[in-house]
Length: 437
Ligand code: ACO
Image (cartoon, rainbow, N blue to C red; front, side):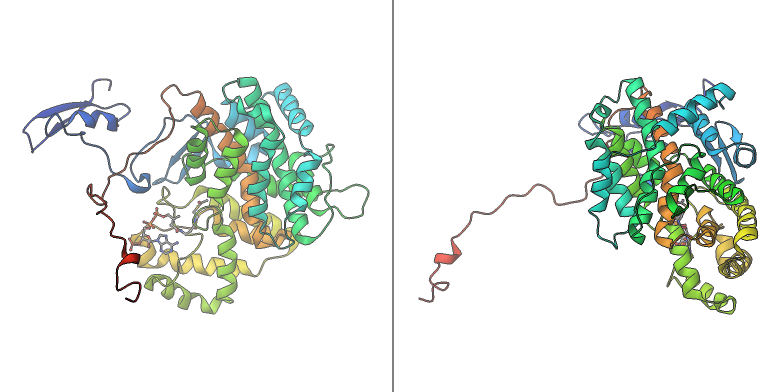
């Protein structure tokens, strides 16, 4: 295994190179020795959108997209969703092992301790217009946290780093709930530290005049499971942004805001909001075949379908369907589920989707559950950002501790003009024709 190599012959020069394989992969830097002549820069890899380029070695999350496998630190996602709480899974992602009883208590206590946000941050939030998009508010408010915690810049100090990580995980639900209440014009609700992570989030979202909020246990469990499913997904678009922004040694609030910005796009975390809009546009089950025809013609995309790595059923979508059944027992069935199930049935039998291996992804059903729980579509991506903060932070710290990582700076293939020069200027304004002479 250690002696595996690749032999490359450069047909331009006839020279042969032996390139070592590590874990079955070449280092693209090894291609640079392949030169036409001594002045040549050497061969690079050209890979727009990282279709076949690993940017790091990671021990956090494993995905086998062909088999539909997702594991955090080696544990299958369905086992974690069934047997663990979100905060246990967060501990696992950040530390590599599940916590024992004492470690869990301490970890939960740490998170509880940091749930409040500074009053100036609350005032900052109040400055947003009543109709600001909740995800835009979240991105800006997370970035604004670095105005409060100046020591966060010391990204190489492990203790300081861990403190900011706890702050971010603890404050994300508070910021998210405040963004939600701001968009409804409701007063903000302070955290209640008697409650679990998810129950407290529900408290900050939905408490009105009652002296104590009591979360429905089925809904709290469902939200906890959704948080577990969304906690990490290896080198996705936003994790890559987190690592890339963090590689310049930007503080974790700035890097997390950058990652959240990447998440907000409709091709990534913003897809759950788009799925609901699509189901609204379709309107009823009988209109599904006509919509699928529009997708096949390329007029529209089937939102919540397709994935860069999953070429099989997204394992998270399976668990989400189960969670939906639990939630609908409390809320009653969301009528959009029938349209979604019909879309899935027709798409999975259709040659267009079969050929391209397009299956429902995590966002296809999550929006339907969130809507049944009482959320507006604008908030769906905010609900994604809360748990994904854990994944971003785990990826960020792994990057900082990796001796092989440096500032992320891709190469380019320049295709613009060759060197040229500005011709001497004639003063056209003084030409006789220009002054009407
Ligand atoms: N609807 C219709 N056709 C699709 C879809 C879709 N949702 N997704 C991919 N295709 C088609 C493409 O048009 C392409 O067809 P072609 O070969 O005829 O040109 C083929 O399938 C391959 O698609 P790519 O765009 O090359 O796949 P890529 O890996 O670049 O994109 C992505 C993945 C962005 C997720 C894409 O499938 C998509 O846009 N899906 C809808 C948005 C969505 O649900 N995003 C959430 C992803 S999960 C997450 O981020 C949490």
